Image (cartoon, rainbow, N blue to C red; front, side, top):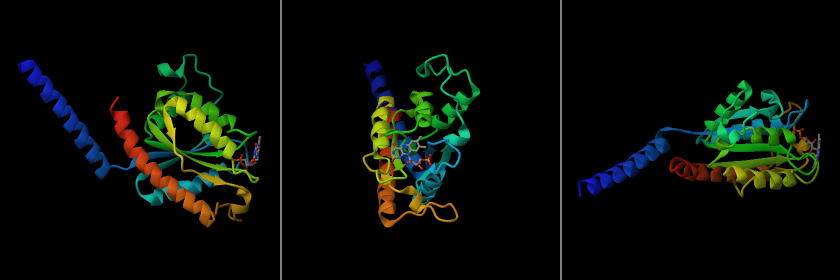
Length: 219
Ligand SMILES: Cc1cc2nc3c(=O)[nH]c(=O)nc-3n(C[C@H](O)[C@H](O)[C@H](O)COP(=O)(O)O)c2cc1C
C-alpha cells in the first residue's frame, strides 16, 4: 500500500515539476532559434535573405535568434568515423556544430535551389548530426534567381528532415527572382506577399516550438 502511494506521489510530483518548468520557460525565457544559411559559394545571396528573416524573427519577440552561415562555418565533407547517432565526435568542428544545433529550440533553413534540390552544403551539415535535430520545428525560406522560388529544394529538404524527427512547417516563404529584391546597398527588400508569408511562418513557428518542446522534454 505504502509503495503504491509512494509511486503515485512520485508521478504527481513529476507532472507538477514538468508543468511548472513549462510555465516558467514560457514566461521568462525566449526560445533559441537558429537561422541556417545554406549556400557557401563566394558571392552567394543566401546570407542577404537570411539576415532579413533574422531581423523579422527578432521583431517577432519570442526568439533569441542566431544566424549560422554555412559559408563561414565551413564544415568539411562529413568526416566522422563513428555514426553520428552515437554522438562520439572526434573533430572539433563537429563538436562545435553539434553544440550549436543541440541548444536550438527551432530552426529556419534559408535555402537556394541547386540542380532541382537543396545545396550539398546543407545536406552535409545535416548529416553530421542526428539527435540534435530531433523534436524541433523548422521553417523554410527558399529563393531562386528564376521563377520557381526554390520550391523543389523545399520538397527535398522537408522529406529529409522528417527522418531526423525534425518537423518542417507547412507555412514557408518562397522567393522567386531573388536578385530583384536586393537593393544597391545589398539588402534584401521584400514585397508585401513575401512579408505576409514570413509573418505567417513565424507565427506558426512559435506555436510549434512550444508544442515540440513539451514533446522533447517528455522523452
Ligand atoms: C550550382 C547551381 C545550381 C543551380 N540550380 C538551380 C536550379 O535548379 N533551379 C533554380 O531555380 N536556380 C538554380 N540556380 C540559380 C540559383 O537560384 C541562384 O544562383 C541563387 O542565387 C543561388 O543561391 P546563392 O546565391 O545563395 O548561391 C543554380 C545556381 C547554382 C550556382
